[in-house]
Image (spheres, rainbow, N blue to C red):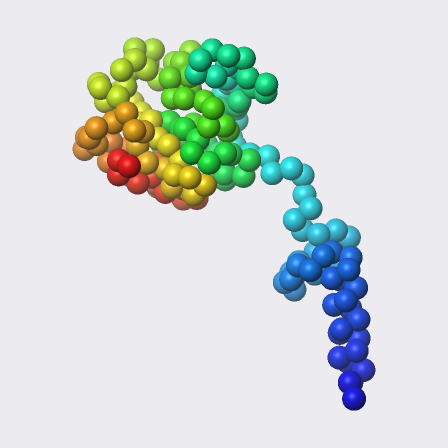
Length: 181
């Protein structure tokens, strides 16, 4: 014979399962639901959070107009809303610029950054051969929080290790790895 406590517990679990689906909720989630009246994961769309958007790319690398402009974020707080394998630029002062979509290439980002005065205009040309001291072009590894130098680089100069160290200290949510894939 079941105790009254178990019957009540099963009834509540059944209600929660029917109302919210078969998800398991922690005590904090359940408290949140009681207080707010909705599931904690039913928030606004997973929009990227960042210090600010510095510009938007309106064309792909072939100069075809994109359906939706792709924002370039400065110092994103997390990677929610960003596609896998997106490109970014880590500046020597620790600022990190990241495109939301993998349709954007570094050249497009560097053009906006030069126009905004973030990097010197000339350093955006031949960055894979001249290794500018102002920044390092990086790429997200799949859907992880890890970023590696762009495939245009054949080697990693010592001062790029310094930029990567500054980036790792400034952005603890991400990991900048000095490895060429």
